[in-house]
Length: 47
Image (cartoon, rainbow, N blue to C red; front, top):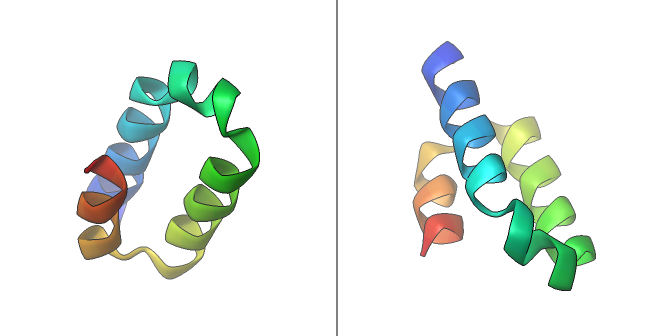
């Protein structure tokens, strides 16, 4: 659980610049991942 959260934070920081362009979509995906804590979805977002 803790590692998953760290991964989410890292991906969030890495996508801050891209997040400005499509902020709404990314925020919704980020919240969805945080609620479900799904590492598989993290890979999809990373791609």
